[in-house]
Length: 245
Length: 245
Image (cartoon, each protein chain N blue to C red):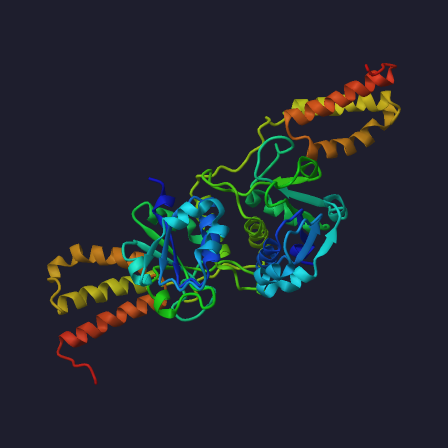
């Protein structure tokens, strides 16, 4: 049982199918695939919704519809509302990142609803009052009104990343050990004398600069091998070698 | 100087103005307001872009256009590309959260570009090769294709939250101290005897249950005061008090 499978997105009173479609795509991107519409108030046809869902039409077509939010969340063991506003009933609001682990942990015990209000008015106070948890998405003071599907994305993204289902990409090449890095400095010092870039007595001074650049840039064994190859080849060329054609 | 002011979103070869508009809104939500279009390949008019930008049309109208990505990022001290794919030139790709602090720290020293490719093909290899940093947005294996504006949102969101400009909401009421919590258990024990819910000798048993509920639910001084009020009123009512009408 994956906790994300126990999470539903509940859209309350949504006006535009395009936002439903975009929300479905965002949900699918983040591994959350259960959609419920509560008291939908759709002003346009589903063609726009299908266009925005792209390849997440399966999520959209499997949606469940309910007459009210109360019915839509009746089976849920946690009801997480989203609100952009402060004030009445909203004292315990948190940032999604700060409660993602808690919500996932509850989702291991039963169904959890993530509830998003109308495009124009959000959730009404009577709907906020049904929520066991409240979240507010971090936004800049300069423009606080976030698109519905964008709000769905950020919320699902925080749960998805907290779920551990996704592993951050890591450098595949093994890191260069210190001995290889010191060999690199030594071989470059030799090469830089050979090509006439510096005199042997200037080595201490110049090699600090190269060591600085290498320390930042030469991270993996592959990086070090590449830069060692340059030193080898430059020495060869400086001693009269010719490139094979 | 805010590091976010030094960050530009660079959209390369974008096809649809709606995505440009949605990206502008997402940028404005996250406090990033500089938009550059490189080699735009727009297939529709700006009315759709304006509709999606909503109140972020100022960001859209202040956009700068360039013939190529190379020109669009020429003044930047870091060029952060986004890629959904693995492979050639992409060994050092990281998750946006893992490098947000590094990118902000570079943005304190000069202009930084966040580069997003075409809706259908992303960034070409020759464009990836111009990037100093590469990021990949975490997505579920089941549906990896993320909308352009949604990719802009997640990337800007990570930088915005890392910038510290946004403070997570916190409970405003002060936390209840232990003495108040113990007073609550004591007053409830007394009340529960008075109203005939339990006998005094059952107190140890029942109060463990109430203490468990209170420990989870009674967090602030306000919460404790509320529940203490219930005990006081129930005792008053049990002793024959009448509610004033």
